[in-house]
Image 1: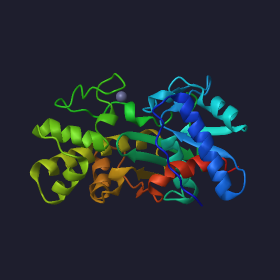
Image 2: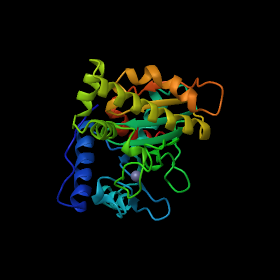
Image 3: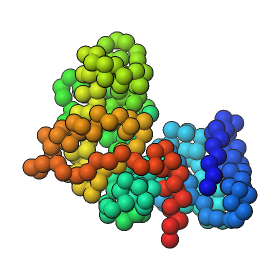
Image 4: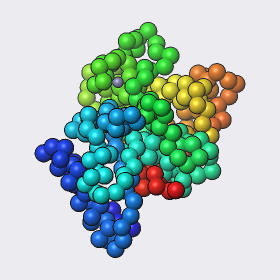
Length: 275
Ligand SMILES: [Zn+2]
């Protein structure tokens, strides 16, 4: 019904809480009704302490975001990781609507994942289910070892490879030239050898991850979101590549583009209240 976006306040955590409070007030004025509040965040709340961790919006890390929002809004609030929200949004009425287990994967600025089972978030006991950005690149080759150093402090995390930033880093490493992800894709389409090779490595690395996830979770569908999910060539060669890594005879799982684009995170947050 309405869409309103504000920049994350740079002036501190308290101002973030006030910004969310004001957004809710504005939405309720627009709708002329009061409602439930769902929030999708980078990172996730620890299910036992309620404190947020792993967020690249670092000012919410270590904070009891849920409790503070509930105090500011005077009602219960549900919070989930933004990739989990993508999975829920696509499971309820998107690209995974016919599937029982939906694995949402973001290949955008960063790399992340979320699982929806029967249209509900599967956050896990630790609250970190499907945090796939920070396990190491599977089937790492000798020339890839130990992998790029990640912002999380470890080496070789998938977040350094299977996303736009990773594609740019790979191109820079191979050629010594800095190039934006969109330009690498354009040059790949134009047949530039280095861009074709970088994109090929990107798809192969993504395939390794999807093979591993299939061996563990074996979802009914993978739904891809984020900027690189709009590159049609990703879908051409991915299934064949996955088959090569899979512990199985062939890979038949559907891989679909997110239906709701970059709205899927906020839609999924709203769907946290579908009961
Ligand atoms: Zn990492």
